[in-house]
Length: 169
Image 1: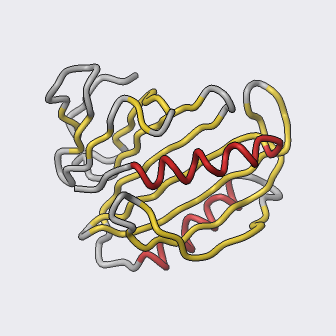
Image 2: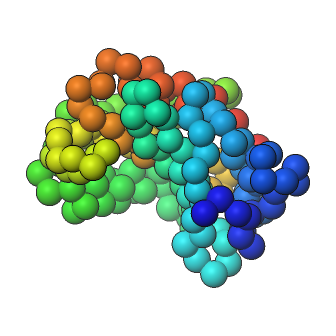
């Protein structure tokens, strides 16, 4: 599942970074204690993509999406993603939201955290999800994190570290 597709280049081979050809975002094999596990190309042109990372202890799932802005604002994309989480996870409710900064360059972003019931690690449990939406040139950068609610204290620092260490071109 982690072989470069047409949207990606792997200039240093399978153990190196995956580079999204159109945006030049680079996805290292490891980032802030997470390991890269797969990537997905959603459209034929290869502009709408995601790269998934996992953290083992505590267990966290992370996805970073890069997609074209097409003239839309980050606020509109954020609202669309909030609605998407509500549609995907019955009973999901926002527990907090607000502006934050991401990337080593401290780019502005919107963030929200949700609580809901769902499967994780093979069992139904209370989960938390974190959504972050930012824009960079003609691209949206969307981060989604999921983890068991009981791991909140440890997970918050890890999700922040990944969002802050993921470098933008």
